[in-house]
Length: 471
Ligand code: FAD
Image (cartoon, rainbow, N blue to C red; front, side, top):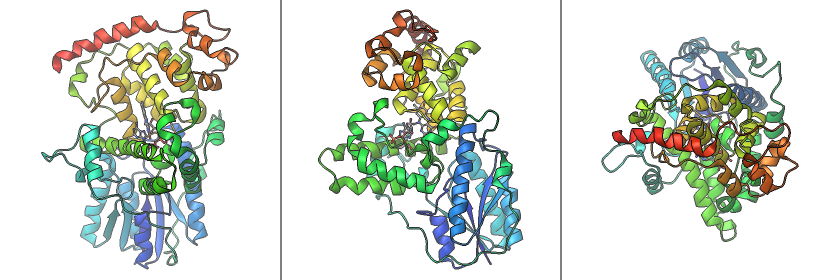
């Protein structure tokens, strides 16, 4: 009986244990991707993620065809669709790589139970996380809530396994089954086509991910620790959307970096450790999501439920979304996001702090905007990042740490190179004039600050201080 490989957040052939397992079984093979936007607890993709998914699936389908096979596409509730497909194929085995979200796990558990009754084997594998969430526990056998001890525990465990190669000599295809056409899914924007900047910035798919990883490891990794906080430097890997869709695995990334440890000049050690600990933050976010569930809707710290978010002012929210707040580094970040579908980590923190603290807008509203516009929108990293900035998260920044976006701009973009790249109204000014633009009349076309930074900071401090009683 055939084996069905069900692709999910693992759109790659290399280091794909579900695929390798199915190929090794020698059974006739079938391949499925199912776009599920309806099952309970599964978050529908945002617009930028849909754009990415379209191209990533096109690329995956093409590489599968090179091996003489076809990728079957289905759209709808996964449990029923996978079950029916297994019946139609007469498959005896289903192979998948594990997922860690609540809704996704419920679908997988339901299918596993149904298949067990019918004698269809389910083989599941670890592929998307270096450390599965239930394997990392505190000394009192609890999940972690604080990053540093979490990562120390991970680093004390067995090191991540070596990545697997693309399997060779694939068995023949199972019988042909009708699927849907990717183009019929309408994942790409049409009127207007806002994806021009995304096309310029990215190459979705396994080959694009491999190029990005190689280029990062060879040229930028050694500078990572010293320059990762400078948005103008492009010193980070930009692997986040590739990791999100599983076009590259964390095991591949880990070992690509690890292999440079001896090959690189002095100074690389620090960068390697720093970079690996950022991969650790991804592991930590998924650890939190696995153990907590609804990270995108509920405050991690329940005492924040009492926080009286004022009703959001629609015009201030729109100014933030459009990059027209009158605060240069905030506007540069929001425009980078809109144009490329990505934003530098430092600037994510600055723009999120500005929204939640200076504008006192509920973090969930900002999280939803990022979810729609980021190509790396991640069900764990995005809400964890927002809750960290808002102060409601696990191991969060204390509420009174309110970024001053002007000082942040001066520190992290001293020459204003990053700001000039995205805020063309300011492109003709000197760096010092850009950093002080909030204090003067801005150049034509650029808005005055929509909020007074020090008064709004004071307002936020008072509002958040009221929560301290619950500490
Ligand atoms: P690098 O610095 O090269 O790091 C390598 C990888 O490590 C990243 O690709 C990512 O997978 C992981 N990583 C790095 N920093 C973090 C972090 N702080 N938390 C979790 N994982 C991290 N990351 C997402 O992948 N998706 C999101 O939706 C997302 N939303 C965020 C929202 C806010 C408000 C904040 C403050 C951060 C968010 N992050 C998110 C984390 C971080 O900003 C991005 O992972 C990072 O900017 C991606 O760029 P890079 O690949 O060049 O990172």
